[in-house]
Each structure stands twice: as structure tokens, then as C-alpha cells.
Image (cartoon, rainbow, N blue to C red; front, side, top):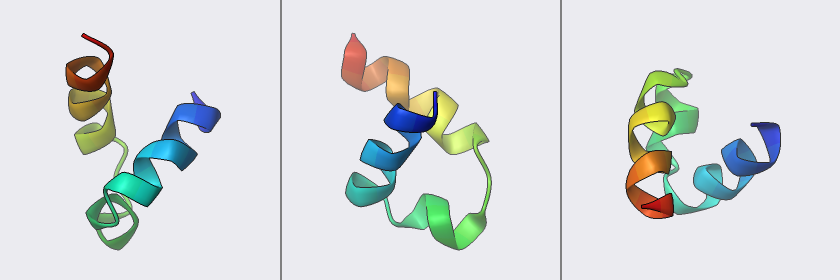
Length: 33
């Protein structure tokens, strides 16, 4: 999960700003799907 989080962080800097993993959890499946 950390690896994907790092990759998402580069694509979605907003995740770092909010400091929440919820957006990543919703966005990750969309990318993988």
C-alpha cells in the first residue's frame, strides 16, 4: 500500500496536503481498474 501511496502522491499532491489516505483509497481502484 505504501508503494502505491508514493506513486499516487506524485500524481495527486492534494493527498499530501490533506494528509488523508481516504482519497487515495478511492482513487487507487479507479487507476487500477
